[in-house]
Length: 86
Image: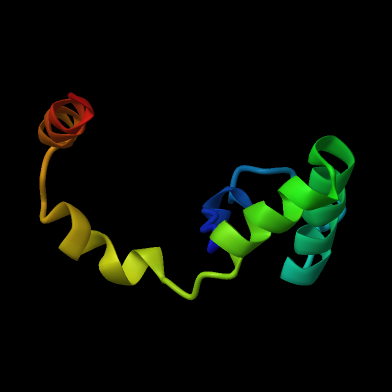
């Protein structure tokens, strides 16, 4: 699973520049903490299923989003979703 974060909120020009530097944790640190939280909350079996189904995929959303949504509006996508639920 790829999660994309907008880091433009870090070190903005109007922020207090004298404040201590904000350290962004490494991906590995975040992934490890997330897995530990999932195990604690959901148990090892459900966590293993979640990881297998979501985190092990090699799909890059940013590369396929144009193909998936083909410049459709949110209203158009919502209509297609509702139509598919019937």
